[in-house]
Image 1 (tube, helix red, strand yellow):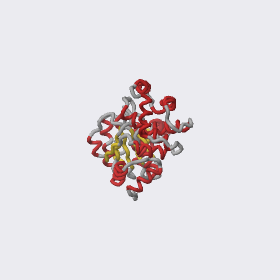
Image 2 (cartoon, one colour; image 1 turned 60 degrees about the horizontal axis):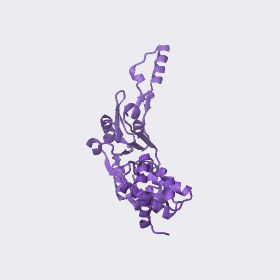
Image 3 (cartoon, rainbow, N blue to C red; image 1 turned 90 degrees about the horizontal axis):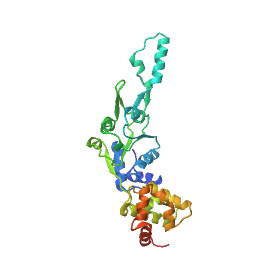
Length: 298
């Protein structure tokens, strides 16, 4: 990888991903050392976006494995094409030719799932293993061979080693503790919700059409909601971006009580959080008072 940390940061920011030195240096080291990058943090802080941005920077394919409870090898690694195997058996019987087991379990009948597809790719790809904390511990252990040696074992074919070592990004929402074995194989990165200043930069990069004052108000309002209000689901970066776009679409250049109340469903996607905000001592007016102190009139 002939790219410096500064060039990586510039490439990420050109694509609208506003990072900091910790994110850039950690990602750079994972790339340079050819080790998987494990990114933990709350939902919506930009973990998955790292993989998407890297695929664009290196102009390569993004192969995504979306994790869920009960995920197994047949959905993640490979599966045999049973219909083609049955057809092969029928044809061999009609032609009265001998058919051995190895003839049925060859690469001709192999269906690649995301992990195997990434291993067998002819060029370096980005493999995103998204929300790995949702799988059970046996599947997590199954990933060890891939993450440490970049190879997988298929009983009928043996060990398949990566043609090109993929760029691997794993994400976790910290719903459960990951094993030390998994973490040892990865470069670890934790991403928290952005500071107000960083969120302003993100909004400037992603929603430049929204005015400067509106972007600042949104950043301060969302930061306040995440830190000072008792919400079940804190608004993500993606939701603050959507909020900015919605307000701009409505021709709103400054937050008011009506503007917040009429568009709150874009930001808070939980009915209990709506009720909690409306019934709290601070409420929407508390947000406006905070904005009055933080954002100077233009």
